[in-house]
Image (cartoon, rainbow over all chains, first blue to last red; front, side, top):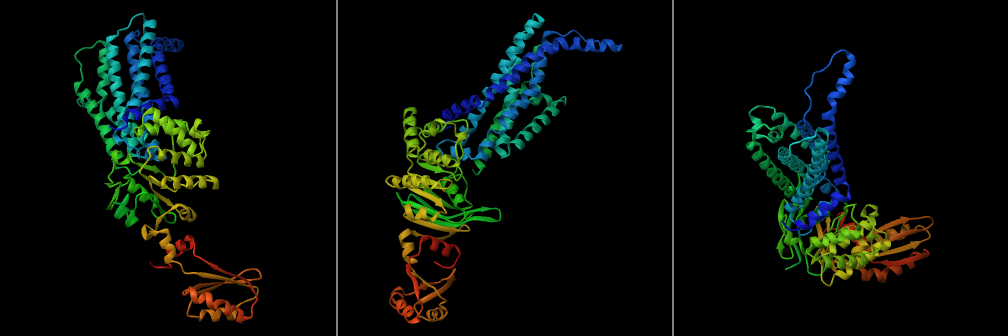
Length: 254
Length: 313
């Protein structure tokens, strides 16, 4: 892990100087604020529109946990997309432009190069998730008057793990293919396939998708639905993705 | 033990053989020119010696250590300038050098002072404060050289160090390379022959991945010291040409026609006889002489002849 500290400082600086940290924060904050608003007012908007059409759609009154579920749902789509967009060029672009060759001609290992990427981009995404989450929680409290805290904290942690899994997959493809668009496309494809498989009843307990339903249950106050299998598999896939990225980079001729 | 050594180094990309069994030795504290036309395998060679690409066959040693992939300790004493150096556009030149200094285990104080030293050496004092995104190709080349020198390398690999530089920049870079000789072994690839003539002690010439020759610059000149004579007339020296072709000390006669004059290029096998007898033959021919000149082969002539396969070594 030679040179890890110096590389990590550079990566974090890059997140700020290329405005990546601002872009991620804005997107997550947008969903953090819009989720409670949409949850609260969407039924009213629909009713006011359809009221003139002669029929009404009966919908249960939204509760505060619905707002938190909506945030989680948005993150599992747009948060994932942002993660892939952020990380797809991380290694591919450095290899293509030749900066990787220059950097790796110094006394640093390829493993520290990858772990520094994972750490800096992971921190960026987790920071965005946290800011969006806090905004969502606070705004829900204002709009609904009450909101549970503990379930939401657990859900945030599980979402964080899910996004780290997506980051790891993206870094794997970014180290495999020089073209960053192709790397991003493949990462999205793999994540979507895993999400589709998560719809199958038995397998879901051993796929990262299980993390999101577990979080949703915790927020809704449904107990006894822990997905330890999903948690273990997610952690394993994160490690595997990074190991794969390291393996790819070691085979690469720079 | 030489500073750089490789034995039967070979690199194949599928059916293409980029490097074919190269065996080379470079002595410590010498400047070694690695010459070849475009696409002859120069960059591949440097990447193999840096451990950035794996050989298909053969072995290499740098600083008495065998070259293996992903060996940070080995690289601590090596400097490397890629053929087209690229940097992070969001950093300033100064920041980049300090970052590289810290990667080379310099303290932050040493990184800062060494960065300023190198910016001055490469003529980037003012540009150092600006973002690299706005640098010209030549400025990037200079910054690339600066970063390669950051760790006071014992062995320095330069891939076409003078490409993209203006004549002033080229002179500066060559002077920097000359100064390095005291403590560094320099391995530079190039196709600019005058650069090699100016700074290199010894050289290797490759063509299509094969080693054509390796020797000191002086020895190579000696070996090809076939002297040639340029003789210019203001009328057609047809008879003299035939006469010269039949002399035993003449190897080859070529006639070049220009506007009003013709030039005979006489390649002599025996220089002494040529010097003695050529003037007499010219005088006897009755032609009016415009110019008579003896020319020594430049490295360029030798290079062209070797690469074109005219001369076997």
